[in-house]
Amino acid sequence: MIKHLLNLFFPKSCAGCHSILLVDEKVICTQCRHEIPLTNHHLIAENEVMQKFYGRIPLEFGAALFYFHKKGIVQEMIHQLKYKGHEEISEMAGNWYAAELKELKQINEIDYIIPVPLHKKRLRERGYNQVEGFGKALSTNLSIAYDDQLLFRKLHTKTQTKKDLLGRADVISTVFDVNFNETHHGKHFLLIDDVITTGSTLEACSRALLKIPDVKISIVCMAMAHS
Image (cartoon, rainbow, N blue to C red; front, side, top):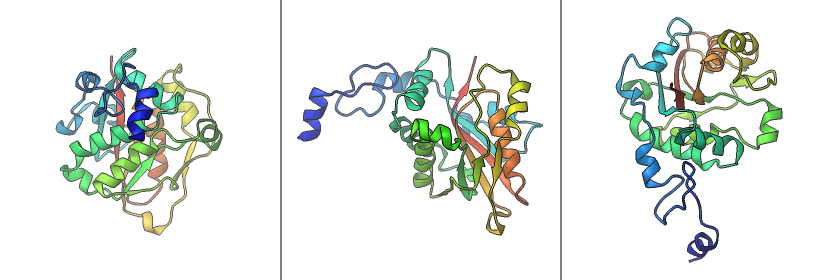
């Protein structure tokens, strides 16, 4: 009863189009859910994520759930997640993708889910890591441990969105490091992030993880930039 009264006076809106959600709709409306561009990467062995990192880092598996288009539904969702405090978007994406990934052999071989970390300053400003909900939903649904302490960010960097690939790589290459022990040797890590653009951040994180002996790396993200 209280929930229905709250929805009556403070109705929740869709994270994609901002229309009022119906009682049985969560986070995004039914229309946006049907219109969100899906990549289906998990069904394609040599998909765009695998191609993006070919020759850069050795990947066991790579995939993103959504395509990210400028001024599209997914861009609005990510904006709401990162800058408007809507953490529930991250969890929704994790639950969605876990249902698609759970039957994959590569996923069943993963030991730890590792989020791309925020610097402590950025974490204080935002109040949360935008990929935490995504990672924890994957962890719960896929029964894989979630570890946000192994990989850490040494330096605080300004946004890199306006830099080209080489410029981003130069700035990011020394930003990340790992705090590991022998229990991490030979493990398979699933690195997660919100959006893949140039891939420089994920590459730098992967190179930090590769300092650990005999590890394997896979990457799964909420979205991938697509022209």
